[in-house]
Amino acid sequence: MFSVLILAAGNSTRMGGENKQLLMVGEKPVIVRSTEAFLEISGVKEVLVAVKEEEKPYFDQLLSSFTKGGDIPVTVIPSGGETRQKTVEQSLAYLSDEAKYIAIHDGARPLVRKEDAARTFASCQTVGGAVLGVMAKDTVKIIRKDGLIEVSPDRSTLFAAQTPQAFKLSEYRAALETAKQEHFDFTDDAQLFERTGRKVAAVIGHYDNIKITTPEDVKIAESLLEQME
Image (tube, rainbow, N blue to C red):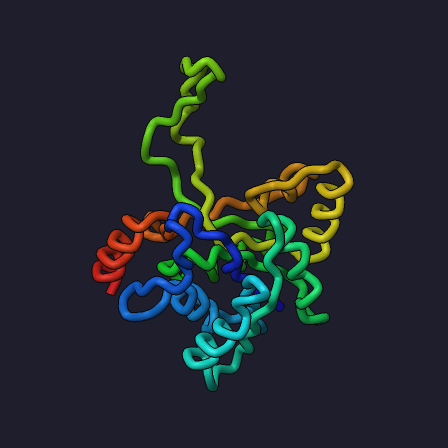
């Protein structure tokens, strides 16, 4: 059983304070598209959407109107922590007791393909952890603090992580506890899993699974959606 946790409690700082989850992409709000992608995937038994406590009533109404009548329950939870890791930690308390795996997805990635998510879940069941992403297109440089280039890693080994990222729940809880004990707070969910020596599979997806971060991204998402449809 997979419990999908969609993170929608960010501050939208680079959006000038406008909640990017509520922006329209293809006549649907971003958060609706991000949620709907998981409602027809085999093995998904629940979808939780983590929002700021004061925004919960609005998201309750919004998502219930789009997911009404489905077999998979969608639950909005007031679980906006100070950081991504803390939000996930608080959200774990809301998972079903039957959950064996957790999949974490950015609410601001509305174009994720359900077939890519399903492949990520399958890899997770085999390996214990899996991350959807794409191979790097550009040559990446590592720079020093003085601004000079230190090294250019082999592009063929560079993988740009996206979401969903999926993990065996018991192993994720253990890795999270280790991170807390060692005072680490990671911005990527797989980092705490990797750091404890646990394996994570890289699942190659599509470049159109973009994250809505700036106003320009909305126009890009609209264009990509037209091509996908």
